[in-house]
Length: 222
Image (cartoon, rainbow, N blue to C red; front, top):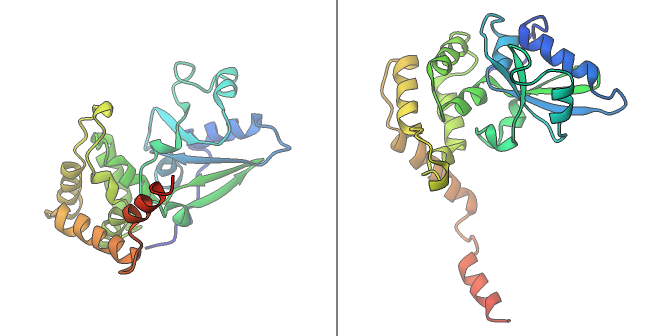
């Protein structure tokens, strides 16, 4: 997979907003903020690739600062939205592919495009398909790379909790992507899920401890 070393356009709308954020954060502390969604693609690939918001994840609560400086929703056309870490759903090894850029006292982390796209499979609206086309035209990763990342993110194909009430069809969305981007069909179960679970089972080792049995012994000591 091609290394993610983009030449970021900080004059793009999302870049200007992130610089505004960096300008008002305390300068005596290093702040770590992950930027996901479509904003990294706008900064790195096409400044005309627009989005209504810039999604960020930070261990700090930025809510009060966002409101105070009019960075939030209904305060400006392009706004900041602080999300929970769980909102960015992709392969667990994504940090190793991420690109970091320092702006004043902020270390901005930009996930690799393949991880940004995998996270869009939960929804896959028209704009998300456009993101797939934009990225894949740059050949930043291969079809096999995408399949491998999806194997490492295999849990996105598990059934949702009833409380989520989500109509997302990740199986169907994956098939749509393969047809639209690669012009072919994909058997999600056989090409992604089965080999991913086999690999996971192998990593446990043939002599992996029987956790259920161990817990039954522990319970018997009380």
